Length: 245
Image (cartoon, rainbow, N blue to C red; front, side):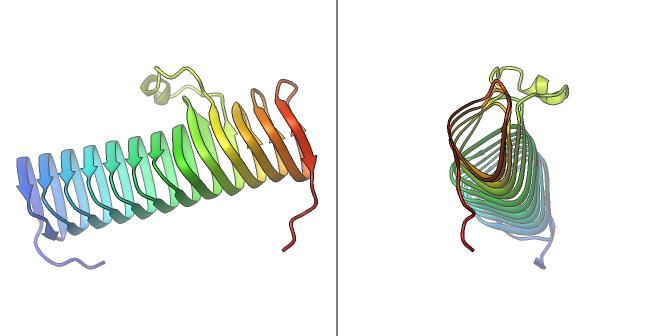
């Protein structure tokens, strides 16, 4: 991406019809009436974009509402952001809350706060400290979820899936103080190496499976080993042969 053009700078309250810029800088309140393409988006305040955003690096401090798609190599949310379309990027960092209505695709995702996806998420590496809510499929190479409140995922598929239910002291306890249940509710969880705590799921499938404290699982299917905590509940355990290549 090599956008040409001048810089867009808004201090206070301003608006733009969109277009192609080198850098976009906002300190205050901005409304973009159409699509916008830039090398760098750096906004502090409240921004509303009526179209798509394309950038090499996007940093949103405050509140961002995008009514289209967001495509960027790096996306950093420090506050609250919502995307009505899809989100695509290489690095996705969230310190606060992010809601995406369309599909989310990224290489690496790091969340401290809340990530809500109304459909699927695809990522190579994903670390979440907070709350994760995915209405569709979470397809991930490696997932590490430490819950600071209730999480819900319809289906998880990955190589390594680790879910921890015991929050540790940090600013997240203050941010998410109103949540009482540090628990994951899921339909199906599949992975080569699966380690769960405080999880309720209909089906868990894996090669190496550990069902930890506070888990309630309907069916566990495993090809290698299964271990479980004394206070975990598994309704049915089934060792199966390895899947054919």
